[in-house]
Image 1 (tube, helix red, strand yellow):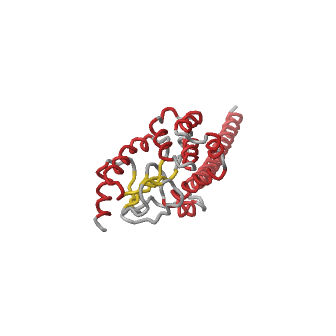
Image 2 (image 1 turned 180 degrees about the horizontal axis):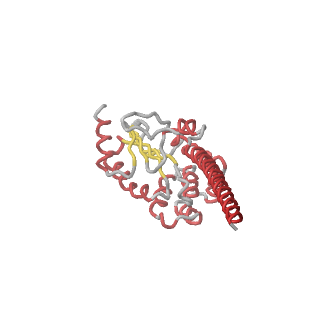
Image 3 (image 1 turned 45 degrees about the vertical axis):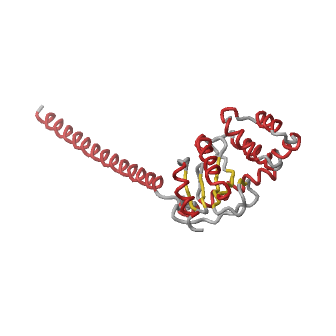
Length: 242
């Protein structure tokens, strides 16, 4: 019995030792796998947070916002103009017909015209923003009216009725303004007209303008629906140079 007891004790010790070794090997294997998974996870996170090789190129290609302390040269081209060519001050507006801030600043622009008369000419540049789905048709209508010499009249009608923007409404405005409606419809759907509007938007992008309204007063940048006094300060400075 003593011999059997001793043998049982030895066997139990061997089993226990084997269990301990097995457990140690299992723990080591688990730790190795865990370390491998952590390394893989760190690599994945590094890939996600690392800058894309093309990101610097894209950032370099994106112009900064216009600098109010600089003077930009902007070609008026064939854009709609209100005021004489020899006016001492040229105010260029990049505008979106569906933009509420553009609608809000329209009375201010009218006050500038009334206050300064022939000393200031106002130039309109198209900048329909992608967030305003109704804007492209409105700009097309205004540009089509421009082809018949009635841009500002159409401009005023659209801004006065921003909550009722539709191609059907623009045709009604064309009729009320005495336009050749058939020609108006043809012009507002012409590819050349879209190219004109797109050219203004491309010019805005080159200047760094991404929001509306945006103004350049003799090339000096002024952003947003500013009060009359903000325009007056710059205009008076420009008139004082003459």
